[in-house]
Image (cartoon, rainbow, N blue to C red; front, side):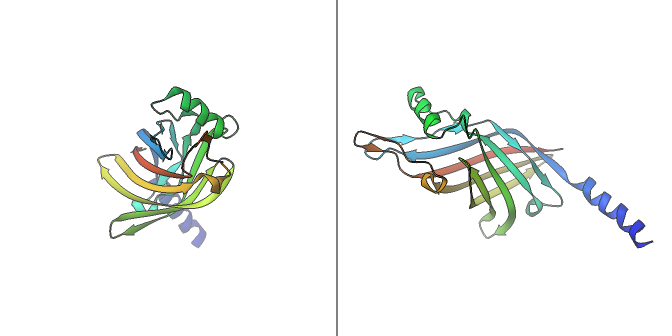
Length: 175
């Protein structure tokens, strides 16, 4: 009897969960060349495997960002970046949400980044907004390339900074 009552409850809770599908978005991966200039490659090729149940803090799943789609303002540099990141071998970076925590300034997404074949914990400061059937995520985080077994490139006396600063802006549709 109890089992027959629990089954509809589980089914109802599953039906309430919404898939969050990317309608538009960017992930910018800022770094710098010491002694020269900023490098700001952006990818708009994003895939969501996120679900949201009752509210923002219930979001779970992952987002894929396509490394081989990163583009900056310099085609030659982009070719070198693709080579350095071995994007033919590691074409996708995946961020998996472990938990979304409400803070005084918005939210913190605690999760794991799988980049260049290495998975490491990564927290992201985030803001979420909901309007109609959309959820907008804006956030930022940073990591070291060397933590993911990527050697920052050098050219003569110029070296690319090891730190990557992520700037995230994604709009999802609830489906």
